[in-house]
Length: 101
Image (tube, rainbow, N blue to C red):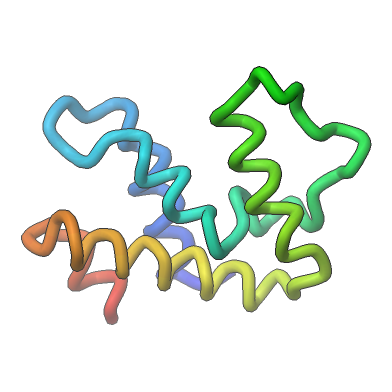
């Protein structure tokens, strides 16, 4: 696991705990073209959320759409998506420089 990925995961996991930073939409946007948790592997098709679980369903669909992606590529995409989001929405976020490395 790359140190950039570890930093990105720690940052995203901490979003719910901070009052001023970007909200949980970062989590969803980071997984749109990436994977919710690259450490887990492919989405389990038997665990697709109910159509009424909107956020969970969106995450699962994004995850399932990249079935077969390697762990390394998934980690890289996760970091890239977070960098893209931060550049657009929060360019002064300190973690951005660390992630760009």
